[in-house]
Image 1 (tube, each protein chain N blue to C red):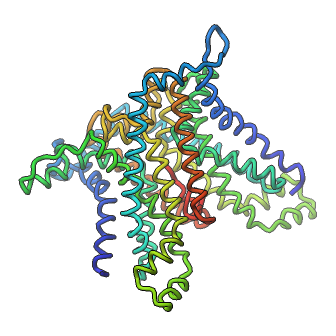
Image 2: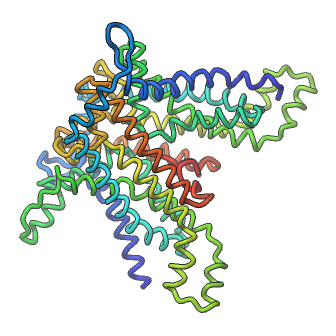
Length: 280
Length: 261
């Protein structure tokens, strides 16, 4: 193909500068610039507002971090054994089992959350089941724990998949070698399998932690309007209070957390941690 | 030990699928009282197609997904062909730029696009939602088409030119058929992403225009309605069919795993 071929990409380059780079730049711009008297001026209003409303922002930020960490941890301890069992399975239907893990990732996120809502509500199936045994109705919804349940339920496949794909590709001869050299099952796991799967673990952690820390729909549906996460605060600033400057500043905080998280995962993850990860 | 492993896997699968199964079951429930299954009925599905709000949302969802996936397939394919013979450095820059919408948390993409539209004083509505969908759809088409271009025999195009074909003709008759599978995968990909999208649409739409995801979100906040169960079931089945088609088309299968909320 000829040399002027690159011209074909030029429209998209312009598009992406206009619709991807500029909007992001605007987020940073509005976080510290304010319009007054027809022109933009540098302002620290919003930064100081974060400190002034320290209570609200601070609690929701800490709550977001706490819930995301808890659910990431739960996903890891539930998901790792699952990935391990699946990767060692010799069943004929192995690929079906793996597909069954991937499938929920592709179901509409809101439908999954809505389905969970119908289960957890006061008249929901779980409570009805419990009442059969004479157990009093448990208030699952509109608490922090229901948000954490929602995160684990929604994001578990994101943890299982990258770990599974690393385990499947692992050189089985290393395990045999360790066994030949006299390592018992536990040693094989702690000294060979687990260290070699760290790349998958890191990308799993990233893939669960980032959507958890940025969500707002989950907390609105399962947590009600009292347990606000940082995502809820951002959503409110933009769509309820029309306070774009403040919303932008909060978005910048989220961007920083996400970048930090990606940096840590690329630092501790192995080279091929991307496998089965974000861009496979 | 083996039984224990089986039990564990089964338990996780039950937890993953039970809520969806129950949701679907109750969409066929004759009674409005939840938790009581009083008989099979299609009344909620009938109600669904009488509800103006839901039908409007369905219309916007399909219209937006169709236009966005057709346009992004055209733009994405042309871009991928252009990128194919680019200098490595330029290619890396463009590739990374197109990764931004895929890697960014959706709330950041949504908020940033909303700011752009506010900044340009564009009334938020269908057009802005469509533009936003193009932003996240095009990269998926590009990453579906590029592998096909790489697999293609580079001399085919040259041979066509040597034999006197006009470059445009050679593209149409030689390159296009070669990369067609990638283009179709990209199209289906973009379609799925558009139908499924909630967060970005939520921030970029306005003026009463809403898609099905936004509608489900709003009604979920208000509480549970059997009509929404029916709607969710229909959406779930549609997505399932689309996914099976996309998954059957090998190659890009790996990239499928990259979906994010």
